[in-house]
Image (tube, rainbow over all chains, first blue to last red; front, side, top):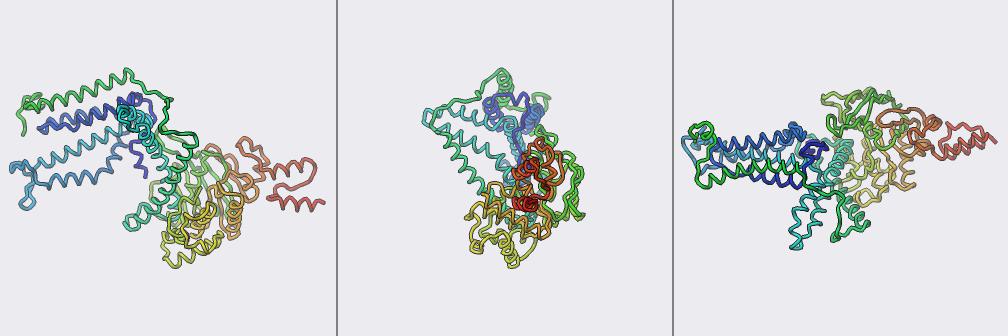
Amino acid sequence: MNNLTFGRYSPYDTFVHRLDPRTKILMMILLMVAIFLQIPTWSTTLILSGLVLLFLVIVMITSKIKIKDFFKSLSAMWIMIILLIIVYVFIPNPNYNPAHIVFKIGTYGVNYDAFYQGGYIILRLVLMVMLTMILTSTTKPMDLTYALEWYMTPLKLVKFPIHIVAMTLSIALRFIPTLLDETNRIIKAQASRGVDYNTMNPIKKIGSLLSLIIPLFVSAINRSEELSNAMEARGYDPYGKRTRYRKLSFRWIDLIAFIVVLAIFGGILTLRIMVACGYNVDLIYWIFGAKPLF
Amino acid sequence: MPIKVNNLSYIYLPKTPNETKALNNVSLEIPNGQITAIVGHTGSGKSTLIQTFNQLIKPSSGFVNIDDKFVVESSKKKNKKIKDLRKYLSIVFQFPEYQLFEETVEKDVAYGLKNFGLKEPEAIIKAHEALKQVGINESFYLRSPFELSGGEKRRVAIAGIIVLDPQIIVLDEPTAGLDPEGSKTILDLILSLKKEGKTIILVTHDMNIVQSYCDNVVVLNKGELVFQGTPSELFSTDVSRFSIEIPPLYAFCQSLKQKGLNLDISKIQSIEDLMSQIKEKR
């Protein structure tokens, strides 16, 4: 159960930790968009994705996220990665090209474009996981909700209950570690009664999971009731106007970080626009003067 | 043979900024067939210590030897006897009522036995015996455990451990949050288990329980062993440095002794003991 700690906030004091959460969210969105901009010729895509990957690895190292933890979190994605490869290999390719066949299964030829397509999707997923991991492990959950609340302020004009949504979010985030501790406690109590959570027998596994899930739900419901009573006892009014103890502030380090990310985003966006305008975008050709591979 | 804890250390979240030493080189022995209290305030490592006893957590260094039958150590090797160990030494955690989940009380108590491979009819019969032992009325057997009161739930949860017939039972604050009557039933149950020859380890904050029920006491402070001996030995030393309060009965006997009454305080566990000693003196 220890692999559930993926993306848990780790209290270091690094450059990335000190950034304003609002900047961090905006930067994450920009980079995600940049990752998902499709640019033809796989060599160019590979170089651009590689650059983003390199940038994210540098950010991870400077914010003291262990690369080992990142691979641990990926281990949960293995099944998805294998499924994706299978889907891409066996779904008929619209740009089927007999010259690109790697191997044949019966009369069905598998193009290597399929591997490139599947690999590209997986690379994107890995980059997304990296981005979210950087955000959540360098930002306190509370700061994240404050930032989200700030981004939602325009919705006030249409009478959207921003504060209630933000409060719900922050309570949910706040209770993740509590429920994890609770899970560990129940696991230990049931293990004392001979439950084996590592069993490979599927029927036994379902039974043992029941012995975990039911007590967990019971205690979560009890907790939520206690919490709502406690909030009401302290006069909580969801529609009340309130001030905040910690104020968020943009500083010059936010500006620097934002400019760096904007440069990456802008570069990739420019290339994409050039593609849309009909230019032949091929970095290999530009740099080495070589012919496009295909 | 008793439980032997040898140079036991445990570090939570090693090599992270949240690293904490929960146990630091603890060595102690817990005798058989007696009630031993483990005392210490929050964060002193009590819970960590008892969890190493049946290998719910593995120590970072050192080992625990249980009756020369089982050894819990830091090695990464899989312990094949782990199921037998958990049947031999069972832990009742704090607020055990949170571990109830089956549809009926008897099924919940029998659940542990089924995990250890016993079939349904025998398991239910044994569950009934255990429920009788903890004083749960027969009319409750087929009801949902969630309908019971707090004290009853706790007794059902304890029955779920007793039914496994462990030789050593560890209870983490079994009386926390119960009314005086509920506490008394559970403490009497513990005494009856001791009479059956079980070894009992009791984690508690309540010095009255330590004085009245326990034969030995172990004090932990910030992950280190600071005292081991009998309750009266503990109370006769300067206990304020462990932030422990002397129980009123002991303090009363002490002031009686200071006023000139010749009492053997180490033999006084209850008001009745005190009265009989006073009667003897007359």
